[in-house]
Image 1 (cartoon, rainbow, N blue to C red):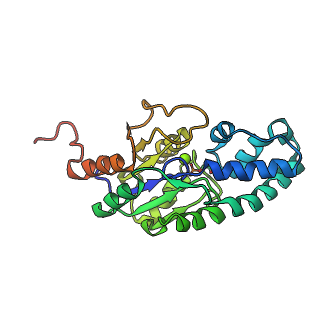
Image 2 (image 1 turned 90 degrees about the horizontal axis):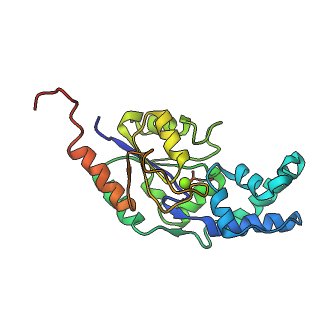
Length: 231
Ligand SMILES: O=C(O)COP(=O)(O)O
Ligand SMILES: [Mg+2]
């Protein structure tokens, strides 16, 4: 099947956001008189959305539901302030997005980050206009690794899962894409909850978004020929 659209993960694939997430997490922990977390810990806590990041920061204290609710409230305040301050585009992202745009594919950003943070961050980093569709962690009742965010993005782009290439940085992206029926490729430099991405699980590992665009182009120019078809 020819590729007709792309969905792209945000944190760890397009943007290095962990510095701002760490600032907000540690300000939240300080508000609650709890010990700070290291950057490496925060890096391993990112991936399943804001609530899971906050719970992982709290550790054993996360069994207290009232404390978790207060922590999420404090995190929202601090991340709204920190969001974008030290966040950087990964190398190759702008060139890769330009190359993908030249291929004529509609692009969607599919992230587990809540919409109140996603939308201003895309604008602040100057990449909002590349995306026809943005699906955030609270757009639907389900987030990655569930398939619904990818199905939602495909429908909004007028595409279908088998014709949509997903580009991500984690096992959550791979599981969501597999469950949705999308081919999936990964970059190796993002956040994968403290583990390297398993190249055996995805269709390809690409070094950056430029290589992701070349991979997408190769699927357009020479789509895989079904076995048994006369050449
Ligand atoms: O919000 C997170 O935990 C991760 O967000 P992502 O889906 O853009 O990687
Ligand atoms: Mg990610």
